[in-house]
Image (cartoon, rainbow, N blue to C red; front, side, top):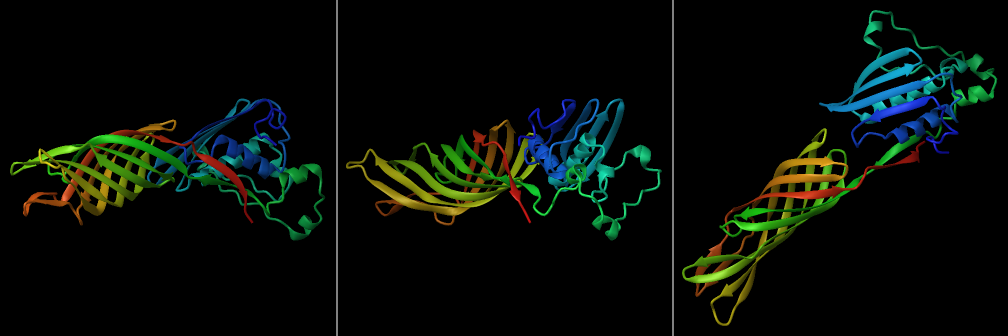
Length: 334
């Protein structure tokens, strides 16, 4: 049953939902309302409009929700570390707006608790309803009470799958060659709410290096993996990344007959940060990375050292990436 179909929801109902991508979508909220009510809403006279907005605030999220039924309007504000908790609060509010008799049809479901408005701060808190075991046993099972008190032994819950991001970048590298070189990089991996995991490939445009009258063309190639902790604010993200890379530096002699080629290893831990802007799955990423050389290249000509790398390789780059849309599925949990 589609919770967004005309046969399911009253014609005067409207939900306006704005939240970060890691929060449940409006569709998921309506599915949870269906699960709470145990079927289609009974409907109500007049129009019902619920507007909710979630913003990231340290250390979690803040929800501002407004409900308007006829000429009556109420506003609430709630904060939580988990956006899913705020979404469940909106589910309770939407359910009570769609089906006002929800609070009185059955004593099994208490009224939703959403952070009372400021005007009610001076009022005495109301006690939750008490349930008499004998009265519950004698409670008649009718169609309306079935909708108000569904079986919750297998509640629906939203399970978020990781997004997938792929990116390309270009910039400058200095350290592995001792002279700056044009470098390029690619990254691919899953993205969760607070963490990115990335597999990386880095390379450089061949760079000519001269020393003691000898000239060679050098190229860097590496493969690596890194974990990035995400600090997200609206459309911006600051990643803090740690990882490791390994590869080689390839050297090809010039102006020497016959030409000679050699390869030497490159390996070390890598750390970096940067700034990411993204919107609707498209993003721009600026990064600064440093690799500490554990194994580095060194080449000799006639027994004399021709080239060796710096202890640290520095890279600055800018690029673009594409991130898959956020997907959620409903899972039965017992």
